[in-house]
Structure formats: structure tokens, C-alpha cells
Image (cartoon, rainbow, N blue to C red; front, side, top):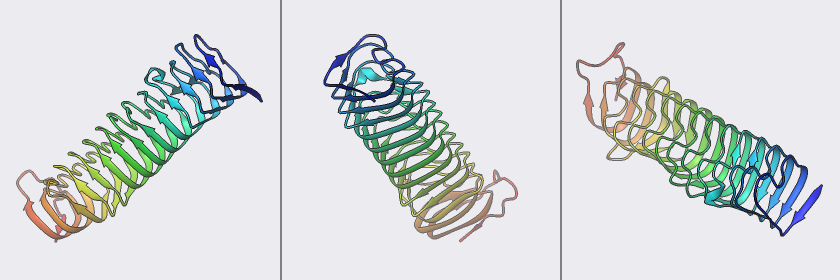
Length: 278
């Protein structure tokens, strides 16, 4: 393996198409595509300032490094990424990338991150300012996770989330086969048009949650006082601990709660209109 230590590189493609390369304490300055088309790459205690360093790469690991804002769109069209103990200041990261593992990673400017990705595993990750996050994700395992950003997980499929704190309006729209455990999800219009969304031991906030859902399941969940007008036009099996502020026109299924503030069943309810509410 070629080893490069404690140096500065900039401009176009300084490490282009390298196979078997270890970078230690290297600063990648302004320029583009510094490590593009490489494979079996290790970057340890590096700083990335230029655009597009990891495009079309295979099997690369980044540790204890920083991606500055200028390194936007750094990880696209690649496979086999491992990232540990790293700060990612740049937006629009991780596009069309598969087989990704992140641990102890902070992304404070996560706008338009993780689009069209597959087989993504996150452990102890925080993503902030993260509008349009995880668009079209297919295959995710996310644990000990914190997020602030709207329109997240839209069109996501086959995702499991544990111990998360998610601040996001319009989260999980049109998602399919997603399960969330022991988490807080706060933001209006949660989960609309989803299929097979399952929430277990979760706290739910924001108006009009979980409408137009198909195959929705809630197990021992809790609703915050602003989570009103829930379940409109949804097929749902729900067990709720505590109070639901209001339920409106569920289509079918069973909703059980300790208390329901208001049940609205009006002329706009849709067939089969046989949901049991108690």
C-alpha cells in the first residue's frame, strides 16, 4: 500500500485512480476529484477542502477527519464507505452510494444528504440543517441518531431506526416498510401516504400525523398535545398510551388509547369506514 503523510495537495485529481492508498494528515485544498476512481483507500486525520474527492470510489475508510464546506458533494456514486469520528461541514454529501457505515459522525449542515443511497448503517450520528434528508433511501439501519431538518425519509424503503430524536415536518412521506423504535418524532404531517410504517414506543408530535397511511401500526406510542387530527383516511392498528388529542375519519382498523379528546367522523369519511375506536 502506498502511504502519503503530512502533505498538502490541491488542483485537479492529485490522487486520481489510486488503488491501495493510505493518506495520513493530508490536507486536500481547492480543486476537484482528488481521489476519484480509486479503491482500497484509507484517510486518517485528513482535511478535505476541495470538491468531489470520493466519486466512483470502492472500499474506502475515513477516520478522524474533517470535510470543510468547500468539499461539498464529496461522496457520490461510490460503494463501500466506512467513516468514523469525523466532522462533515459540507452539504449534499452521500449521493447514489451503497454499503455505507458511519459511527460517531457529526454533519451540522446536512441539506440534501443521503439521496438515492442503499444499505446505510448509522451509529451515534447527528445531522442538522438537514432538509430533504434520506430521499429514496433503500435499506437502512440507524441507531442512536439525532436529526433536525424537514422532509426527511421521503420515499424511503426497508429502514429500521432505534433510539432517535427526529425534528422534521413531512417526515416519512410515501415511505414503505419502515419501523421506528423508542424514538421521538416531532413535526407536522408525519408519515402521510406511507405503507407499512410501524412505530414502537415512540413519542409523536405535530398536527395531522399519520394520514392516508396503509398498513400503519403503532405499539405503545404517546402523542404530544399538538398531535391532533390524527389518522385521517388511514388503515391503522394503534395502541396509544395516554391521550390522543383528536382522531379524524380513519378508514379501517382499530385505535385504542387511554383517552381521546375528540373523535371526528363526518360525511367525508371513506369506505369501509369500520375502524373501531376505544
